[in-house]
Image (cartoon, rainbow, N blue to C red; front, side):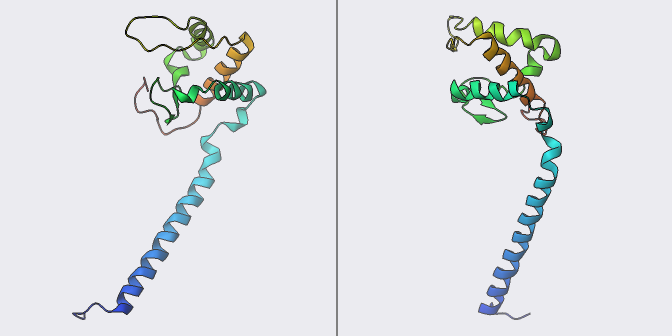
Length: 146
């Protein structure tokens, strides 16, 4: 091998490395697009879930909470709140009761505002958070409490 590093060698390394990483990027993008439908549960979408997402967005819940790791870190992660707070048996009762009890006015605790949601909006928000909990997130968040 030559003792000098020529412009031709540098050019070959640049183009070869660029081509390699472009091919890696394309392979990963293809893999993501191929496996994405298997990981979501979009087949279970209902009108109630869509309305629940609208409630989530119009009340800016993501301004305090995170959902699947996205959002503010002021309040708890809600991507797995369905599993944390009762699952199939208890969550449909827990969330509406929790929302109606806010603010709790417990000293030293952060206070969630009272949004005065209707029973239908609470049911829709419950359906949205239940649907969100069933998305395959590769075990995110890493612990049960988010």
